[in-house]
Image 1 (cartoon, rainbow, N blue to C red):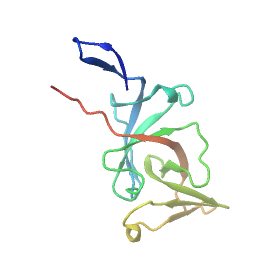
Image 2: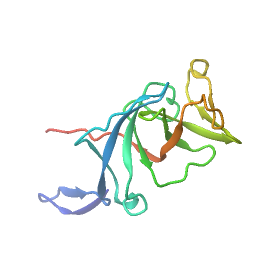
Image 3: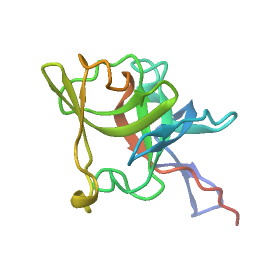
Length: 158
């Protein structure tokens, strides 16, 4: 923040030195077992303008559950880009079984995708290994790579 001018005599007016870009919220995404994801219509999140050009299709998700609590605090929002390649060790929203999804750290090992929880309760969240060559395995696709996180804006009244 930078002081720019004065309001009343002797009282500086504080204006932010940054601006925001509005992106849609995809909704809540399971941070534990995958589950169905519903788009949150008319719900948005503000991200810094610096992300607008490099991430024009960015969206937000709310990690639900505690399997990623070492990465996402309570009420934090993961900001994702569906156009970024998900690489080994990235955190991503992963689609499983069509309309279901989870947010996990992703590891690639040959024909396997391993979904790894980052939890303070690691015994409750074992790695999930999905063999892409096994017809009995659920179909998997990358919905978006996480590139930033934020807290939701809170309305303030004075």
